[in-house]
Image (cartoon, rainbow, N blue to C red):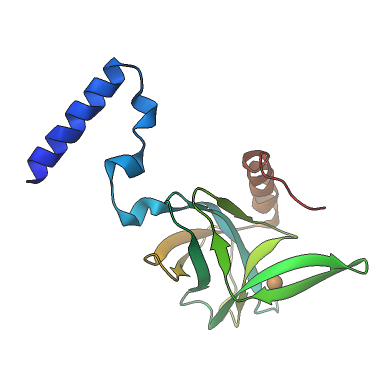
Length: 176
Ligand SMILES: [Cu+2]
């Protein structure tokens, strides 16, 4: 059964390549499965400031599926509470507010970045240092959880990461 399926896919691919429309046969049309519908890129966690137990995490989450998925939050062994936060300017002051969830529409990418959306990690038991990796699980209302290994970045690494994120987010509009 599986072999037949694979054979069918391969022959489809070959036929399409032959006609020069291989690009249209994207992953979801081939049906590689649910687990690949959410992709997380450029994730990192800020190294802890000595004496604090709070830090934050940033990443780009892409919904490659055809339906809206809702990010409900995250959990990790290193933190007893992780919240979704949004930074916003109000009366010239930078404020943070907690969001219950974030809807990610079909084919949409959401960018979690400093001064914008982020995950806030509370009660971080041990200081986080650069070169460390942290297992983090993202939970969705209507899609399987996604567990990622997130590197901890020093301020210098973070600066480089922000430049990379800015480059990849260049097509997406932002409020300033
Ligand atoms: Cu926050």
